[in-house]
Amino acid sequence: MAQPIFYFDKLKTWDKVTIALYVLLSAGLYYYFDNTTNTKTQRDILFGYAFSTQIFFYFFNYESLRNLSVYTFWVAIGFIHLYLYFQLKDNQALLNVRGHSATGLRNTLVLLLLFQVLRFISARTQGQELVCPSKSRTDLFDDRQITFIDFILFVIYIGSTLILLFYD
Image 1: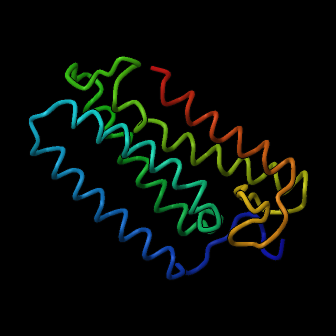
Image 2: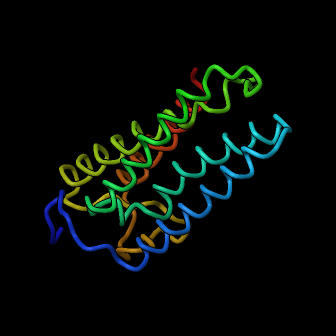
Image 3: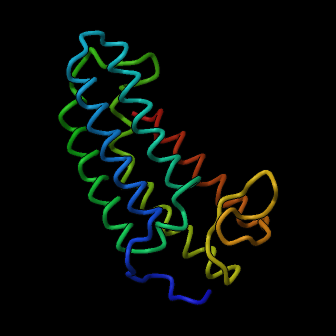
């Protein structure tokens, strides 16, 4: 690892694009959510929005989350998610069969923290940054071989995401 585990750096083009797209997508989904009277659609939007955000972190943004400048932005998003969760959690119309559709919104901060813990574990045990396993058995961004520890840490993150999503 060339850089310390915790560092601040300028935003890369990828970071700017993903942040801008996320803000635009969030605004569009909020508008659609707020203007639809179909509660099933609202439940689906909430569930998909929270889940896809948390999966996006690990699959596509794991390299960016190493930069604390980017990480700070996503933590701010996590606080917005938590605020929205507290605003929506008592709305009975948003209940699904397996819990409330807003439950995923409360998990963003926890999963961001878990991501940093897993990074730390990866750095301590392997001397390498945390990466996302892929079908080709090499990392998309760092172009290094995926290890068994990378796979275990990935399973921990995905498992935690799913458990928290369905735990009210």
